[in-house]
Image (tube, rainbow, N blue to C red; front, side):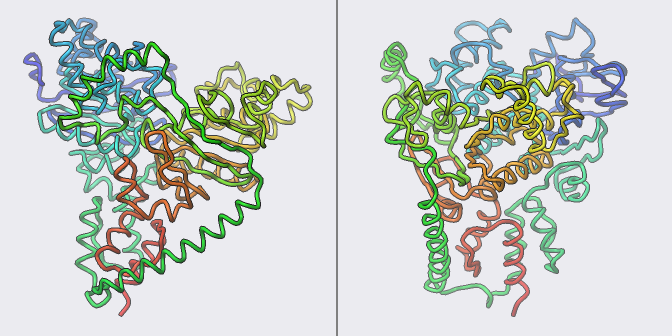
Amino acid sequence: MTNPEMTAQDFVSFDDASFTYDGTSFVFRDLNLRVPQGQFLCLLGGNGSGKSTVAKCINALLTPDSGQVLTFGRSTADPESTYFIRSNAGLVFQNPDDQLVASLVENDVAFGPENLGVPSEELAQRVSNALMRVGLQGYEQRETAALSGGQKQRVAIAGILAMDPALLILDEASAMLDPRGREGLLQLCQELHQAGLTIIMITHFMEEAAQAQRVVVLDEGRIRLDGPPEEVLTHTEELRALSLDVPFAASLSLRLRRQGVTVAPCIHEKELITELTRLAKPERLTKDVEECETLEAIASLETVAEEAEGVLNEAEAPVLLSFQDVSFSYADPAREEQRRKQRAKRRAQREQPSERANWGTDPEALWALRHILLDVHEGEFLGVAGHTGSGKSTLIQLMNRLLTPTEGQVLFRGQDLASKEAVQHVRGAVGLVFQYPEYQLFAATVYDDVAFGPRNQGLDETEVERRVRKALAQVGLDLEAVMRKSPFQLSGGQQRRVALAGVLAMEPQILVLDEPAAGLDPQGREELLDLIRTLHEQGFTCVMVSHAMEDLAKLADRILVLNEGSIFADGIPATVFADQDALHAIGLGVPAAQALALHLRQRGWPLKRMLYDEESLAEDLSRVLQEG
C-alpha cells in the first residue's frame, strides 16, 4: 500500500506547529508529534482538545500558522504537495453527511479513486472490494440519502479505502456504528495495519484505544500522555480529569484494588478474567451444575417479579402512542425493478462467505419496518436498540408523522396520525431531537432559535418568552447569558443543549431522542444523559435510540430491540440483557459489566443479580474473593 515516492521514516511530523482559527485562540501551539510509517496510533482528547484540527492538518485541509507539518516528508503548506498528500492520506470525517457526494452508493465510493485517474476496469474492482470490506456488498444501487447513519458512515469509510491510501485517518469514524459495526471496523483496521497501512484513529471508545500500538492524549492542543496503551490507559485519574473515560477492565480492576482486592491493573477484559481466576478460591466457586442452575433460577424469579410490577404500572398509565401492525418501506416501483435485476447476482453472493454477517442488514430487505405492535405509555422511558439499518430512525420518524406508515396505523392518544387534524398537534406533542441536534440550529441568536417552534405554534410574544426562558433553564442555560449570542459561538455541548431547548420550548408530551450523545466526550455524554434523566424525572415521557447499551441500562425502564425491521425483544433491561448470545447474533452487545458477570457466572462464580453495572459487580466480586 505504500507509494514508492514515500521514503520518509516518519509519515507525519508536527514541528513546533501552531494553529488558530481566529488569530488569537490557539487550538494547538508549539506542537511536536511524530508518527512513524506503519504505526497504529490512537489520538484521544476531550471535545475541543484539537484532535480534529490535527487530523485536518495532516491531510493538508488546514495548514499551520507557524512551525510546519510534514506528511510523507512533504510540507502541507506547499501547494505543489497538496494533491499528493490528499491522494495518499485518506480522512474519514466524524459525520458521514459531510463526506458523501453522490446519490448512489457505488458512485460515492467511486468518487475518490475516479478523481485519482484510476482506470475504469480497476475502478469497478476497487469499489466492489471496498464495499465488501465494510459489509455493504449488494448496496451498490442504494440511494445514499435513504441509508441509516451507520450505513452512511460505512459508505464514507469504503470511499476512502477505495482510494488505497498509505495513511488512514479516522476521525470518530465509529461514532455512528452499532457494536457489530465497531467490532468490524476495528478488525478491518487490524488487518490493514498488519498489511502495512499507517493508521491514526481518533475515538472516545477506550476499548478501541486499547487495541492500538500507541496512544497520544491531547489537552488544549498539548500532549499530556504518550505511550503504549498499557501505560497510558491506566492513568485513570488523569484521564478523567481530562473529560475522558477509561477502559472498563481498567476501571473495574482499580475499583477492586480500592476495595482491597490485589488484582493487577488491566486494560483488556481477558487479562482481568485471568487475574480474577488467579485470585478466586476454588471453594467459593460453584462446581455443581444444579447449584448454578438454581442461582440462575433465583435471579430469573427476581426478574419476573420486577417485570410483573413494571407491567402493572404500565397498565395503569395511559397509552400516548400506539403502533398497530405498522409496516413501512422506502421502495418505489423503479427501485423495486432495479432490485429484481440484481437478485441473481445477490443469490450468487450469498453462496460465498459473506462479510455482511459481521456488519449488518441484507440489502434486499424491502421493508424498513414490518408488523410493528407497540404501545408507549405516559411517563415511561423507552430505550430503542438495534443494529445499523434495523429501522430505529424510521420508527421514531413515524412517531410524529414525518413518515406515514405503508401499512397499519400510528395513533396518538387514540387519534390516527394519518388524519390532517392530527398532524399539527402531534408535531408539537412529540418532540423529535435528531442525531447531532446542533445541526438543527439556524437562527442568528440563541433566543430566536429556541423561540422558532413556539412562534410557529402561533403563540404571542409573552408566552414565547416564557417558554424560551423555561426551556433554557431546563437544559441548564441562563437566558440573559446566552440569548443574544449566535448559537454557533457556543461550545459543542452548549449547542446541543440549545437544540434540545428548541424542542422543549414547544412543550411536547413525548421527548424522542435519536442517539443524543453521539460524538460527545465522556464528560459531555454524562452531563447530557444526566439532563435527560432529570427531564424524565420531571414528568417527560422519553423515547431514546442508542447504540450504547450502558446508557440504555442506566436510563430506560423498558427496552425495545429491533432486528431487520421487526421487534426482536421488548422488556425491562434485566430481561433484555440476560441473553448475551441472542443479542450478539443480531449485532448488539450488553453492558460491559453485564457481559463480564455472565461470563463468570457460567464458570461457577456465585453472582446472583440479573443485571450488573460496574459498581454492583465490583461489590459482588469483592465479596466472592474476600469471604471464606
